[in-house]
Length: 277
Image (cartoon, rainbow, N blue to C red; front, side, top):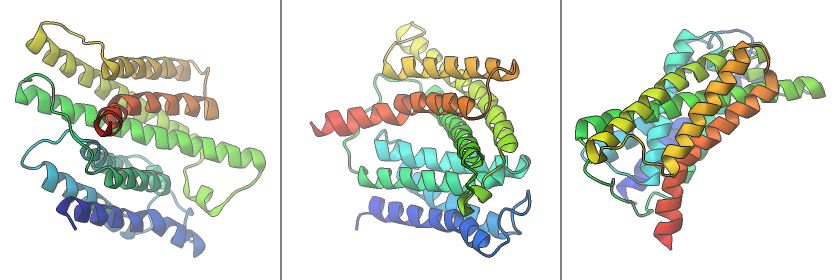
């Protein structure tokens, strides 16, 4: 078994306990009863979930940067979990996103494991290392924040659907209420918009240093700008009181889809589709 595959299996295994534990507690009648995690167990399992993907990132990217799809996905998983820990520690009821978030990140980890040997393409040009590192860090942080906002939006969608159908489940009991989900969604959207703006600025700075132009209108840039515009419009409509609930959640998920196409989506096309061809 290769080192990359072993690390991927370890990272996937580390995500499972934090995803399964809320369901076990719900089955025992204690889950979903409070607005804070049940004791230290939540934080212990979350630390384990973070350690697995973080170990992959440190071992695989610690000595040299990799541009492949697997690296992009595992880095996104690790950053999303780190940001989630920060949000869960500071925002009421944010920890309730854990079951939905961990299931989604586990799926990303599976995709990263499947395509871990996809051919990688070098970074075009010769960007200044400091600016490149800053741009990558900020861009991944923006993607991680929007991932959390999309998960909060998905939670709102699921809760409103359950209320409309008058059908609740063990899983829906673990998620935030509609009002809590909307508050989390709005705050995370605002944070992701600010960080995405910084990512666009650092990207334009690199373009100016290399080519004396601010924008290179490739797929990644266009999709990122569209994401920025959709989030800005959504925030405006939200604070004007013109959009909420499942309708707002759909726009959040659409914005997340655009940024996903811009970041791991472009890598999938270049590394897997074109690379395999």
